[in-house]
Length: 182
Length: 174
Picture 1: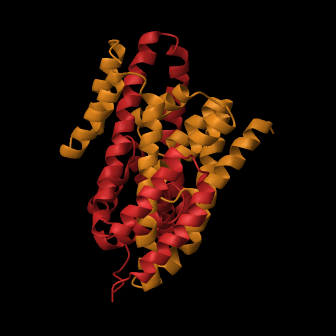
Picture 2: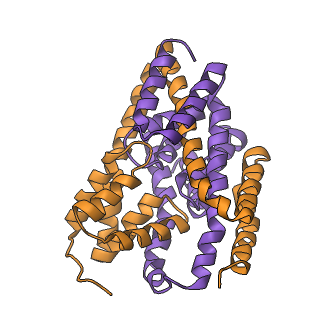
Picture 3: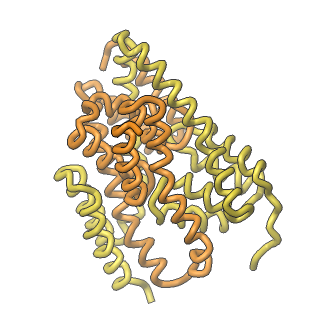
């Protein structure tokens, strides 16, 4: 089942992920899929989905995990470092430059007011993302229950994340195991 | 080394291993630590940094570097990002190979099914915490609500929402 792998060098990984890093706002995953699967053909659709599901399951920023895993696949440690550095370098420079600029102009009230609008809209974007992700949970009512418990614990009662995860993750995985199909 | 930088690094090294579901899932925990426990910034500062991270190109984990920047300047921004990405990247590197072998294992499917609703609950919490921090007027709540509705119903680019909201804000409506 292993198709012959294309040879991808460390510099190609660096440049590829540099483009991905600059391609989106507030998240770049859709652009990552397009470049890796459709444009460069580094991975097939299925291989990419596999990498993505691992990246989401593991802790850490998802796209950083994707860059580490794909970098490793083609070029070991050097590939991972090249891909990850390519991904983060420019966005980090840009956002820190923007922050420095913002700090200088924040005394002008119109700049602060503009960002009050942006932050109201940005929180709406996150809620919309969460609601989209919540749709498939409806098939399994117990998943809705787990989701509600996580929300009530973190958002309303401000329980420290470590405690919540330590209790809820094993419980939820146990239910999933018990209700597994077949 | 500056003690604030060490504190920042320690906080984000731990958060790196807790961020199941990615950067968007740990925003309430970052908020709890940065605003409530450490008193590094106010609610409004936090909301504005998040807005800034959305208005810049790049992955959504950039919010972490802005928290670091607010606390300890550019060095803080870089340290926070390295700490946030370090432990989880080492783990991803270590387990990537084994994962492919267990593609269809029942335990792997159970783990994914079990973690999915936790992740969704955490991201919903992020939206809630950000809305409470950002929205100080009925107009702000209206912008949040309209953004949710349009983001669910249309496939418009998110930058349009942010641009229109910025104009409304600058015009003094928010």
